Image (tube, rainbow, N blue to C red; front, top):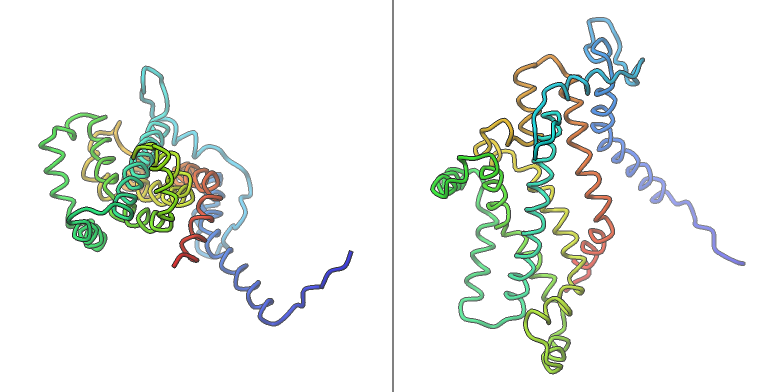
Length: 294
């Protein structure tokens, strides 16, 4: 068995060092949150003359115990309020992810492969909507959801956060770019074989744009999870709050209890990490396809 040894060049060394430094730079906040959530108060608050405790001297679960102290019910099941907030965040993000991927893939396919009057104008509207600041449309969205009486109830206010996220222009823009890579000959062959529009989409188009849908799923989940301004104006009831709003409430009520705040932040980071790990393969394929497309 023969093989060439990789030469260690200055470029390779510099690249490796930069990657390690960037990894440390981006992972350090997560490390600080996780370790801070299991630290005692004396280890978190540094007094004058004391050094920073980078590693917890003792592992304490008191912060999580206090985080889960407040109780509520969901579907008749007693649970901590923090878990209810986490459930709301996950529910909003998953429902928005599913609806966005479905609607954006259909709209992107239609804009890419169908010929109809006003197609270019409609796509231009999506592009213009991408440049529109979210803060501009918050009040009109609140007015619209109030007219629909969605903000009056707990579940209604939750769906009042979901529906605006579903109409994400970037999702349509992204799926249109992926749908344009599908050869027209494949679509014509499907029609010759007697496949209708829906069967053509689900049997031919959908498998070919699956990497793009995987990338969009991650983007949509993170976008819905981080939609703090929309959540702030729509979710007024305590039971309807997301984990981000709940942590913000803890920060305003207990400004010096950083251990409790870090415990909530550590709990909030778990779903994002799991979703990225689940869709990492599709995300990488989607980014690669987008890079070589042209």
